[in-house]
Each structure stands twice: as C-alpha cells, then as structure tokens.
Image (cartoon, rainbow, N blue to C red; front, side, top):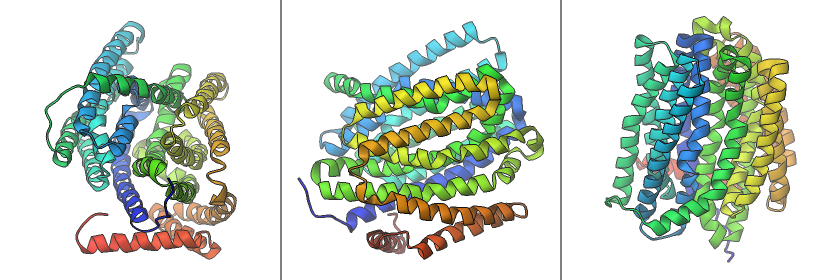
Length: 496
C-alpha cells in the first residue's frame, strides 16, 4: 500500500544512521591507513605481495563460509517479529561448520600445490581471521544492523580497527613477513568477535544457543541467489590480486597491494550507505511505495555527490598518499601512483552499484543481480588473464573500470523507471565541474602540503555545489531536518 511521503523522522533516522556509520568508517580508514603504512614500510614490495595475495584469496573463499547469510538475516529480522535469536543461532551453526570445512580444504590445497613457503604461511593466517573469525562475527553484527543500532555498531567497528592497529604496531617490532601481519590481525579479531557477541546479547537479551532446522533449510534456500551473487562479485572484485600474483609474481602483487590498501577502505564506505539503507528499504518495500521512491532517488543522488569528490581528490593527491603510505620504501612503490590514479575512476561506479544493489535486493530482484555479476565476473577474469601478461599491473584498474561501468549501465537500465525523476545527468555535470576545480587546487597544494590540499578540497567542493544549486529544494529540506536532528541529539548527549 502507498502512504504519504515522510520527510521528517524517517529521513532523519536514515540520515543519522548514515552519518554515524560514515564517521565510524572515517575513523576506521584513518586507523587502516596507519596500519597499512606500518605493513607496507615493513614488508617491502615482495612481502606486500605475499600479504595481498593471501588477503585476496581468503576473501574470495569467505563467501563459501557465510553463503551471503548477512543480508538474509537483516531482511528477515527487520520484517518479522519472531525470535531473532532463532535466526541468529541457526546462522551461527551454519557458518561455524562451513568455515571449518573451507579452512580445512584450503590448508590441504596450499600444502599440496603452493611451493612458496612464505606466501603459503600468509594464506594460512589470513584464512584463520577472515574465513573463520570474521565469518563467525557476521550473524551477530547482522542482528545489530537489523535493529538499526548503528551508533553501537559504529563504536564496535572503530574499536576493532583500533585493536588491529595496536596489534600490527606490535607486529612491526617483532616480525616482518606477510604471515606475521595476518597473525597480528588474527589476534585483534578475537576480542573483536567477543565485543559483537556481547553487544548482540545486550540489545536482544540472552537466548541459549539453539538451531531450528526449518529455519536452516529456509536460510540455505534463500541464500542461493545471494551466494551466487557474492561468488561472482568477489570474482570481479577480488580475483584481480590473485591473478596478478600468479601471472606476474609477488612484486606486481605488491605494487597493486599498496593501491588496494588505500582504495579498498574508500570503496568500502559504499557498504556503509547500503547498510544504513537496507533495513529501511525492506520496510518501505512492503509498507510505503511513496517513501520507497523518495528514498531511492535521494540515495542515488547522495552516492554520486559523495563519491565523485573522493575519486577526483584521491587521484589529485595520489603521489603524496603513496609516499606517506610507503615512507622510506616510497621508491619501491613509485609505480603504484599511476595505478592508484586509474583506480580512482572506479569509485563513482562502485558507489552507485553499491546502493543500486540494495534497491534490487529489497525488491527481491535477486536473480537479476546474479545475472549482472555473472557477466561482470566473466569479463573481469577473462580480461585480467588476457591483459595482465601483456601490460602488467596497469591492466587491473583498466579492467575494473570497464566492469564497474558495465554493471552501472545494467543497473541503470533496470532501475530507470524508479530513478527517472532523480535528474542524475544535471547532477553529474555540476559535480564534474566542481570536482575539476577542486582536484586542480588539491593537486597544486599537494606538492606543498597534503593536509592543506585535503582541507581546501573539502571546503571548495561543497561551496561550488551550493553555488551551482545542485541540491533540490526537497534535498535541502531533508538536509536541514537531518542537521537539526543531529544537533538536538548532540545537545542531549545522545547519538542519532
């Protein structure tokens, strides 16, 4: 059924959730950058190649341990009033068994086929913290997200990022291999898992572990399209570093690995927007068509407004950022600068795709997402296999730009009716003009001061967008309501 459009409390709640999670992600990015700098400057290019290869391979395999259960849990807990712990504990049991099976199979494969001992050790450590501990955390984090406890989730995410930084800092003094770095991250994720379990109990109360076999069968059935989509998306998003390591060796993987440590946290901010939007999209998809339409339009415009200055700004200061990341080893990673600048072109496409996929999942268009990812994965894997031997590392961002642009086109075609009134064309033109001015100033200032370049860019871009009149009257109203809500909560000593 359709209801009146709500531009008040609902918009403030969603906007507040986004702000809280974005703030947490920004803090996490700062921690992650320092953490990455410690790892890169300690390991060098070859060691960074081992670390990045292990990260990419373990991330690829995590999908078989979780089956995409996170999204199913958030959707079902949001829409249903029955015992959430039944769903959570059932999912925990499933993930527990699957993660151990995946880990065992990977260990056998590594010892049987990978003769590179340092890289093999790094893969083992990465598997333990990504495929096991991180996967076990997902059901509990999903419960918090479904209850829209974004402020609490944000605090936990920042806490875990701080634990990782402290653990890696210790690693720099005691070891210098990719396995040591992943071992440090493994140690940090143990208390991280405990924090998420404790928070879930605090929010939902305690319920003894129990498994409902009917729920398990339903979860397994409904995870099929999500599993397929995750496998295919990881193939196009994570397979590049693995293929690069196999086809061009550890040094090439190290060059791109440094780029990943910068670009991946920035791109993962798109997941923050999706995480904040998905529960609300699920509610509106069955309760209010008007609010759903408004949320889609404003969300699509928001991600472009946010992601375009990120892309232009990061490309403008890429040389300074790589130098800051690598420290004394900056010369080893000089080739990473051009690769990072090309990779920045992926960011707007990736952000649009990240929000569009939430629209499609909330509308139960799961198999459309699978078909889009199937095409993208095929092009990504084939493109990298063909291009990497010919041109080396630079092939990876070129293929990524092509694939992400293709997915954006497919999603736009599917959602064209829902986004017809979003006026994205005018927004793109104004944002591009603002970004060109901002990027030029940031590039010039970066030669003198990276901090000044970032500060000036942060001010110039919104000023130009205001001058261009990019925001619609309704968006200005929503922004004002959101600001008022945030200020009111801050005065009360609360989070949005």
